Length: 265
Image (cartoon, rainbow, N blue to C red; front, side, top):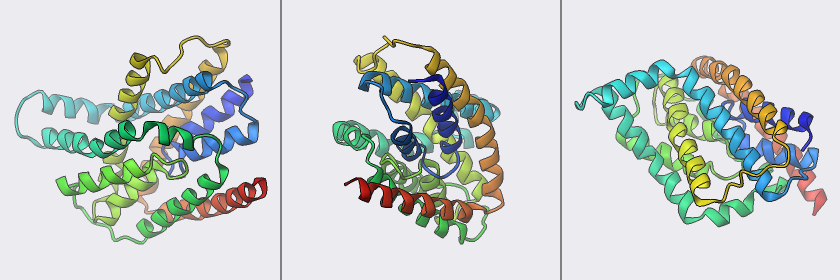
């Protein structure tokens, strides 16, 4: 992989991980456009590095929230922080179950299927459009909401369905406060990403032997910096109920991807 390609894909990952337009879908489209010449092991390593970069940017943006959660959790009291942490753990269960039970089937979908990405982007657009029309409330995420949002996150494993778009939209449509919905959405993915990376490293699926480490470094830095910007920007956009603008973008890119995918058949 060329350094310039790594830079472009890093920027795409950093922006689309937090903006509700599907990072996995855009990475697949980006690889298809740039021509992904990496062998499977190197491609997996690059994807993992980019996801680690955006997870790290989430930790930086929400460092105060994470500190307060950990402080409350280790006080060993049934407080708000403990309940919030347990809700995050509860929301992770559907994605962990789907990821472990259907790992091979899911990996087969990440092979540059532009047509699939196009249709899933349309689904993402519909979710964002509906969420943009939801009423503002001050409601917090309940235990039941955590399960439903977790199911939305599990479905968002599919390339083209935005994880942040699906979880935030689901949360907002359940009547939750927009800011609290965004906070819950971004924090709930950090343990999953770190857990997935740890699993890949321990299982030996992730090859540490890469012919050229410079693209990995460039991609990591690009994803981390753009992730910081996109995460902060997204929080502001959710507060202002601007989700429907992203739905139009998803519709447009989805239609183009469907046309391009159909022509390639």
